[in-house]
Image (tube, rainbow, N blue to C red; front, side, top):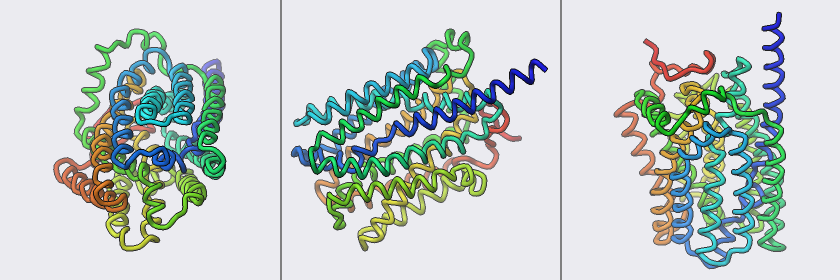
Length: 415
């Protein structure tokens, strides 16, 4: 009887935490700055190659910080890391607003990157632990998808506001986003402390972290999936970086970017809300095999028609937002609670390594050709790389079974 009462209390606490987590995700929207940030940097006189270099250095900072941040999340507690991440992001937004030079923007990007890594793998690890304690680990994709959908809905509204605010003063969208991140700090304080036994976390040292990551990446199905999804994620990130110059290049006025980004967010919100159904009907394996091909084909023919290019941009946003919870579900299901944030951050680091190359090279190619031509060229490189990976070692092979429903599992292979 006592055991049943304790379990019921745990379930109710987990559901309350899920509601608060959704509120936290809603306040993590970048909607105010999303439609204008690249155009703002260009307005300050920076070239495409300078923008490519800035975003590559931003990604490099993220790469170098991912694993230490994940380890700190496992060691010190995930809630405190989320607060620190939001605080640094507020500093970055205000720095963006007052910057006028490459050095100023570089400082803003670096601080922003550190803020992101402090919460990237930590937030997903916290959610999965919370659900697992309540015996609902297999609901991760559903919860994460709906939380992301709420974030995107907020992004749609704030994108319209941000674009309008930029017409009044370039500083206003950055102040608006800083205010939203301040609300995220308040939301984090409503979350329960990290999942995972505190006594275990206190004994989790860097020496322990290395074999955990090595063992995780030694499993063939997981190893190939990490590289495959990382390459695809990096390409989607490149497209997101150059969406604004691509959009203006096909005839969309700067004043219309707010509506475009609001459309991105609304369409993505609807599809992402059904991430759980996509996982159940399509499956993680077939999603990651088919989504890159669909996006790739669209971008190959994108230069032939502005309408196709616009559709490709929408497809890219949807693929990016749906892929994230599916990837996190698969990885979380094969990671132990202690070390989970470290593993997710390591996976993020691998994606960032690909993204550095894409963004640095992409900026140079865009300077010589055009943003849309650059996207086509890098798209071909992405498709070739994914095809080679499939030939060498199929990602998410059928004999590697996600154990989301079985609790807090480690990577296991079906015999």
